[in-house]
Amino acid sequence: MIKKSIQTQEIIPRYYGAVFERGNNALFIPPTSFVFGEVLRTDPKKLREYVIEWQKYKSKHQGDYTRGQPVHRPLFPIDDYEDLLYCNPNIVVEAIQEGLLKKYKSKNMWLSDNEKAIINGHLGNTTLTADIKTRYHGGKKNKKPYWKISMDSPLVLNGSYRFNAESCQCDDHFWGGVKKGVKVLCTHLAAGMNQLYDDDLNIIKSEKVIDRDVWLPFNFIDKYGSFDEQLTPYMEINEAPERSSLIIDVMIASFVKNENSFYINKRLAQIPEIYNPELISGIENGDFSFGVLHQKKKNIKTNPDYENAIRYLRREMELKLKKQGYTENRVNVLEFDNTRWETVCPEWTNGKHIIRTVFSNKFPPLYTVRKVGDGDVNIFQPMYDMSYHMSHPFSKLDNIQADKDDKTRRLTSTKVSIPSEINIPDIIKSEYKEQIEAFYPGNKRQIINKSGL
Ligand SMILES: [Zn+2]
Image (cartoon, rainbow, N blue to C red; front, side, top):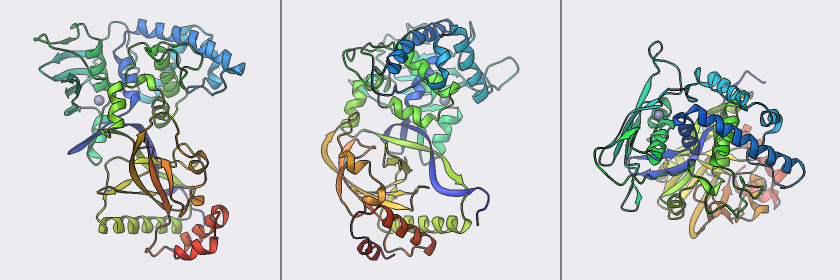
């Protein structure tokens, strides 16, 4: 019996980004915050110039792509919007503004002439405070509301980053705050940090002459520097674009093509040039990792009996982990990343032991067990056994392999397993058996018996 749309346990992602764990909470850093923050604080005349640069770079790129060189698909393909490359730049500006209006009921993010995005900017000893324009409409008539931000500290102090505490009144930052102690480095905080990085004491005042070396985890202000000679996912035509081109790419993807922010951030995370070198070493030494903030559980058309069974199984799996001394981490992670079975899942840890509960609409619930070794970290290269990594989750059952972990970007020993010592409802049992019959390459009977199915 198929009923109307009901909730399943698959998690829909909202953001992908870098995670900084610190005691009581985690700071979640989506690269797009620094793009949107940059757009928010940039003069509209300058943004129009960005559009012109983007058209120049992108049309050359597009020509190469359609001629078969380079062979890779661009990170931000233009697809059905190719007209935007050859039109009057005002049309591009209007298309982006229209998208902003749809999403935020306001085009605040793309300033009008003489509007100010940042007021009351101040840098104390180490704390940045300012009022930053909201992206949404609202407030009193004809008055654009501003959010108060505070950050301690955006500065490089004694040679390293010190993200101690920060606040913003916006929903994005607050939303993160109410969920398991996660704070989001939102567009407004990023706008303030970008401004401080680029400031000449005009907008962000400071009484003292202090070192204003700002630590931007993701940098969309400076030109591409020492990477010019390398081909990376973004720079495929052996010619470094201005960062402005990347900013417009992200604006088009977000507000004209309406792509999910999770996927946009995931693609940005593939571009080495936007990373602060200190962020790269922070990931290598384990201070930072990669994670996912979730939106909600997915609704699909399915059998309500199946939904109840899945809910029951989830409760049982979690109960068992708790009994064994595991606690759920604040931030979700990706399992089976960059495959058709990519799933956002909660991570449970008990000391050095890591277990993830994987709930997907494509296969019945699984555990993945990962043992993080002390092997090298490789943020940008695959470095895993591709045939293992890319194969169906059920073909990996009981087969412990070294596989790259998306969260830590380390090679880890990985095991995929069916929940055992749990009374699995019959409706799911038969699904497990089907998946084993279809995808498990070894002795199917043996694994069915072993898993108590
Ligand atoms: Zn904010």
